[in-house]
Length: 311
Image (tube, rainbow, N blue to C red; front, side, top):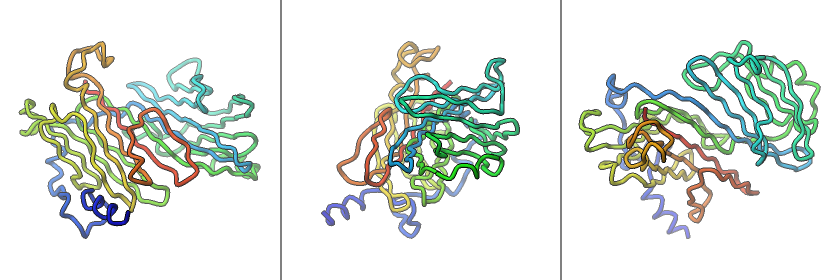
């Protein structure tokens, strides 16, 4: 098995080991990836899925979705497999515009309470706030999940039990051009990595008859797919922070989906592409899982999905 793993590793792209650069190229000219001709896409929504384990050993899945449009930001919270949105906040709605407060609800015999303060939230270019906010979720009297600046949460000290929670999946939606930029941590103890996805023609977007897909991690090209209209689905294995990470792409709808199939207003070329980065523990776990998150007892896996719509 060790020989098989060694052979498999030689075929994969090493990202964290900078001393071995034969499998990838360093992006020496940032202009080549961020040309003025190509305006970066806008992040319209982010969905984070957390696994919370209470002191009793009982686990809960909490989904937190941040969304934005031209005039407002929104927040939604769901738990488990319940499709009903348990908590909703829209900064531009007369019904849900209260930016500070709390809400209690009960799902599947578990009691939840959400404390939030977005009154001074600061946003960057993305959908989720970057500073000046907090969101705290209490599950069965335990502090189950906290996001933002906890120093502003006055009731923090009153909760003696603090559950363990992990980010197990992140989904980001973009709209605009074919340049997508994000960050990801593939393990809790690892560092944050810059990810850049770009699709252009050979002549920087002019020669659209020969589109090329380029994916960079920390300014290093990990894949370059030419003739993308023929190679619209594929995968590549990376090694990041000592972990195997499967990179998979599906851009079929960019080229072949009609407006009705893709949900877009226009015809072919307006569909949604999907890019997935997924850590795995072994050679036998290479699966494409868009909507299913498996809860396992062993080392927790992490998935990043980038949904990209051309407009």
